[in-house]
Image (cartoon, rainbow, N blue to C red; front, side, top):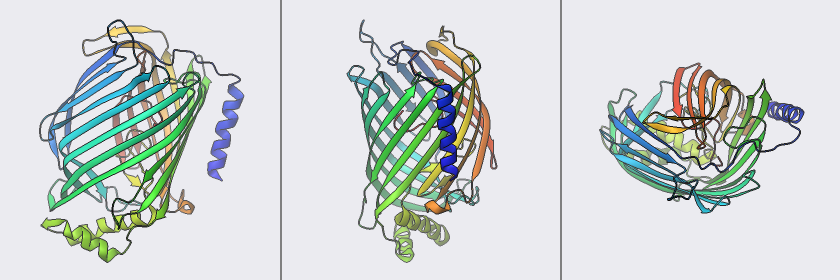
Length: 415
């Protein structure tokens, strides 16, 4: 009932403020821009070092302008590796676009929470250390009607080796040697009924994604995930915007994996060959049991939703969130700038105030039994090359978080 009420409010507000939609800018920008930034990092359990980001937007070929964007990240220090991306490759200009990329890392890590529920302890996690990590992705997009309707398909291949489990301070709990490799495929569409794809000030945007997660082994679950991302934009003041977002993602299990806890504990134990900790192994096996029974629809926390919480903080088979953001546009004048490390055309500068709330559960009926909230302030620099440079500070029950990234929040594969 709460979900329907929230959606009804979005539609009423949009309908009352939008009578007709016309694009106010070029939807296939070809303004050239570039960015070069150092990226120092400290990752618990993995190490520290320095990365370098280089990006080139709308790369021309001689006198021919294109929408091609190229990015590269070189990482040195304790984590060696790099990422290469090419996006908006115009296979058929302004109709058929390709995104492709690959990343390789000698070492990496991520947090594994012992309990994925909303009421879990934020300090109750271990660090899963990875080695020989590789990922590849490809996305194909057909776009029509001045980018108001897209159909896309998105494929990924991931390969890595779990080498160790560490506590939150980075101290070794036990060593392991377990290789993982998996593929996933997502298909979907986007309806972008707004006045601008990059920086909308009025209209509606709906993104639907269906992601297939077939069983990678006889004891793994076979399921698919459907995601809905609806955002409404209401013009306020002269050229500012009030944005409302609703996100829903749910897993549907076609075949459960093995849910026998003793079997899963034995399987986790088999990956350990030094300093085996039975308590940690049992807790990780319990999380695997939940995934095998219900699937996994994703998580809350990080740069997109519930921004005051770390990435992956809350996860489950059912995920829902909603948010509001006032984007106060201080300037919409086109201003070229060249600061040696970045060159582009500024088309907008905004101060944003936002509020979000979200919930996760393994059963739909348990959604919103508990929730968490996040609020904050940020800035956005909108550029003519089609990128939004975003700096946010968010705060919530578990403290604050500062985010630097190159897109608006509430993103999905469709954007």
